[in-house]
Amino acid sequence: MMRLIIAALLTAPPAVVGFQTLPGQASHHSRQSSSASSSRALLSRPPTQFPLFAFSNDGDNNNYHASPQTSKSSAELPTRRNALLHVLQTTLTLTSLSPILLSATPSHADIEGVVPIPQSTAPPTSTSTPSGVTLFKTKSGLQYIDLVEGTGPSPQYGNFVTISYKAYIKLPDVSGKPPSKLDEFDSDEGYLIKHGNGRTIPGLDEGLHTMRVGGIRRIIIPPKLGYVTSGLGPIPVGPYGRWKLNRLLDRMVELKGGNVVMDVVMRGVAEDEADQGYYEDESLTPEEFNFLRGNIEGSQQRARAAKQ
Figure (cartoon, rainbow, N blue to C red):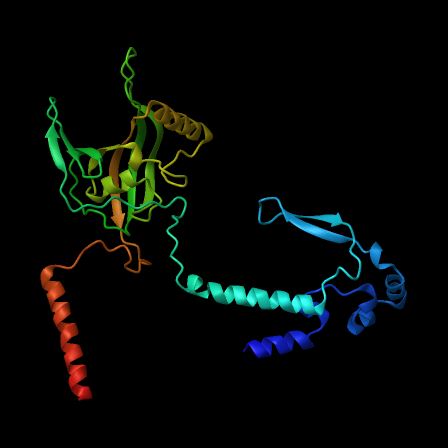
């Protein structure tokens, strides 16, 4: 293979090999494609009058700048031999790096605006407040209060969920100042969610997962389950609401505390007909697992017996 590459480079025209053709060495095809007058003007031009350009990048992959440099004499221009040596050196370098390239580690970068949903099979703990309200707390730190128990189905990951909500931010209390109150920044009477697609703040997705249609729940979302990255909803539609949300989030960062509070009414749940089953969150029971394992082992035994 290497011999074929070397032979191809030795017989290739200068433009293919990769070094610059001198003005007096213009190819036969290029002379035919240009007019006779322009060809004579180019060939009569001294080599030192042909400007060379250096290309630089300003940090943006799409913006390159060309700056003229001092022209080089014909002796300084790359020759076929130098170009061939450069190609051979590049080939040897890539060959030495091939084990590293083949065993490269996978990328673990996250897509902006997509976050995983906290999932836990542990049931939430419950405590009763002095006013008789039951407060539930999950393993992730999410808290919620069921104001009205729903009677309809609960959503599964991959379903479309329609909700009505009012969203607030509760800043932490500051010593020497009156207790902070809920500050509303958004509301919507018909908000559609693709449950579990990672485009909703994770605390809301987790809080909706155990609700039933017709239920009303106050969800208290800690900062780590709130607006942790850009692209997460729900966000206000108007500019004032977005400005207010950003201001309140900045205050949460300054005060190192606070919660996003959402009063949610679950209106409806519908299956996505285009869902390919990637959102299924049900695991196999031990009986189903043993049944599948028995089928696989039996098919393997029958295949070995047929070969014998």
